[in-house]
Length: 316
Ligand SMILES: [Mn+2]
Image (cartoon, protein in one colour):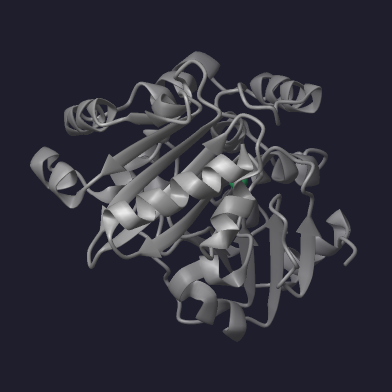
């Protein structure tokens, strides 16, 4: 599959009247940032554009411009569907129907992706979809300080605030260019990272208390039950990022979080320093990146834990 050109993408947007930009289920900063940015770019090109993802509006990104209109599609059908940050069409959730119904579609992503759009722009060397959006539109003059803030958000969150191994010199060049375009870096970092609710801090405290180390401290496991969520007044959305605390323990090579859902289903996240945890996730029908992956597993909690620890041990 060869990538479409920037011109083809702009031509496709120009040819449409209405555009639906869709991110993935369980939206993260890159998904939200890229969806908001592409919607705003389409609007600047004179289009009626909406941004959605199949989820409750992620309140942690309420500081971004255009948050109010997020996840409220105005039309039943759109001329053009643009998927951002979505490795496969399943991750569009209920909005997959809009992809099928649209006259044209574009898929823009940095995950391994087979390209389910009519036009595809996939670059797995990019740290984030926001980096790709910046590269696509940087010479158009359309990126203002608000779009730059949206893109900076994805750049920062998908690199773990410029800490993960995907933080290349190109990432810093992009961050510098976005800063030049007027991002208030200090305020945006504060909005992204110092924006937690008290209930989330309480949940964090419970989750941290329950971390158990295995394999001489090389594997960390964190279990978050429905009872933990309920007693703190949290939902599973509030577990985002908790695994990073398990990963931050000295000597831990692979960290695993298991978050209980209704009906004995566990949403599992895996993080690693160097081992391929996407292969571990794939054993349970999930996927992701080499160093960050996830899956859903149903069954008995302790049985699942055993299987996960075994799989992680083999991946070490
Ligand atoms: Mn991403």
